[in-house]
Image (cartoon, rainbow, N blue to C red; front, side):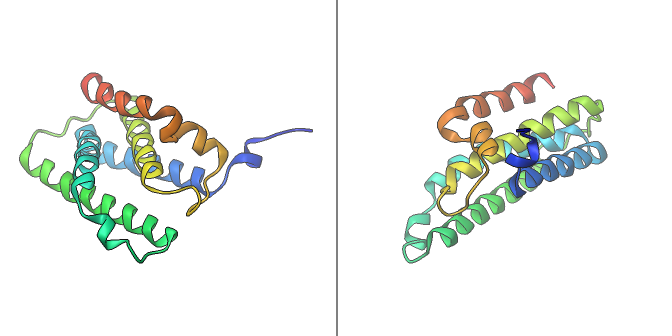
Amino acid sequence: MKITLRDYASGDIAVFLGAVALLFFWGISRGKNRIKYVILASYIATVLFGVLPITQLEANFSLRSSAILHVGVMAALIVILVYFLQQIFRTSDTRGSAIQTLLLSVIAVGFLMNILLTHVSPVAVPFSAIVLELFSPNTTSWWWHIVPILGIIFL
């Protein structure tokens, strides 16, 4: 019996690869500092999300609606924080090599997937086994919280 990636992959792998491509092309066109802003904004949004009174809002929501609320609030926080970081740190856009930009893109999207899996119950939204293995907060949380910092410093 031949086992291929297609047997284990699902739409969440396509979302991951699409997000990497989106961040990569954004980083190529606008500079790799923009990807660093996404990583920094993700850290700040994670802290701010813990302070927000989300539990009062989601009292009457289903699991799926609660997951959508969590993802929507986190995405809005990240977008707002990236905008503010761009306004505060008006640095020249450093156009790094394509390899550096690709590595930062993979790191940023991996960190965002780890944050997503922290806020979304696997019961509400089923994820594939490979995504749970790579990005689950139970098994690889330390990895996805340390590597983005190293990526910001060294890339």
